[in-house]
Image (cartoon, rainbow, N blue to C red):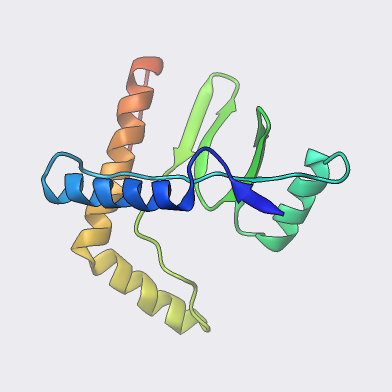
Length: 141
């Protein structure tokens, strides 16, 4: 049984409307809104089992478990290996095609979309700005 988390469905709708107004008014460039839902488990939940199930269901995604948050995402949010960190930001995505030719066609359309390129550049800029003060050397392709 799922129930509202910090925001009710009506609160969520109001937050979306407010964000759209701010974007249209030029006061906001991009927003990623999240809405949590709460569920009560009838038995303890093993995060390892959740990770295995997520990896099986979404084989092309990165799975993670950090501070109680378990999930799967097509983006490599951040990975640290020794002193190196890397991030793979994705913005402006499309569904896979039914065939390799369809995939290539979708990729060309995505790359040709000014809106999607702008969205990706904005996301990459946000990550660059967050990592710059923490890195001695930073490469953003």
